[in-house]
Length: 296
Image (cartoon, rainbow, N blue to C red; front, side):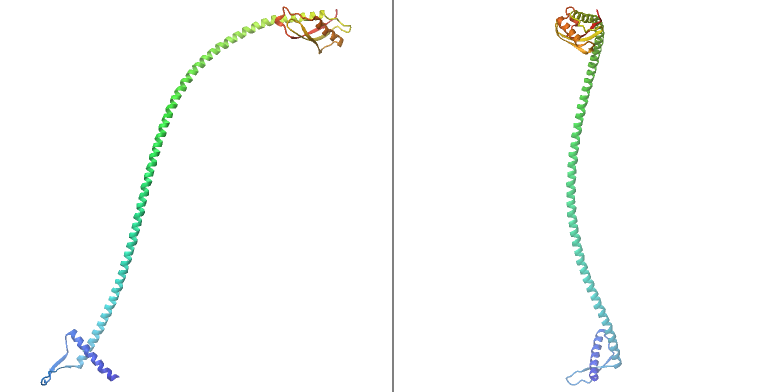
């Protein structure tokens, strides 16, 4: 196996050297010519083993370096691919964010438009309300001014009426005072006349009662039981003209016995007609007088 591997390795190294020569362009070999055979040209290259080992080492180094470069390139390509993928994803995310932001802006614009329309409508409503309120205030102010004007006119009218009533009241008071003064004078005069007439009538009444008493006494038949110091009050009912209707002894004001009381009643009824003529002014339908007996 080792014998087979050496030629194979040697063949690989030769190929590597040839490849390295293509890159480096330098060869450490000597070219010689062999005698040419008739009709056949053969070229051969003699390779120095030491140079070959150097080339092999150089190729190994170059191969290692190339592999590192390839690995670095592959890693860089992977990084670039990852970065590109990230950038693509970031671009997609950015597009998505842009789309979200655009949607948000669209919604915000729509909301703002709706809000603006609502604000516009609200302002319009407020303007209408303010206008209506202003019109109402102006109307109320006009009505208040009219009411104030009417009240002022009414107040002036009331003051004029009050002044007129005060004058009428003062005039009436003056007339009432004059009338009161006249009534006072008339009353004083009437009282004076009444007093004088009462004095006259009092005297006439006393005389009237005396005449009735005398008329009854003249018609009295004294019973045996009558005692001196007799005092009996008699109530008589009569009609104009002096005709007697009834006679009653006031028992609580009579100190006579029953026979005497009946005799006094009989005397009144026997008189029949009491004095009247000349006593018309002091005549009364019901009159009381005191019947007396103090002895003969």
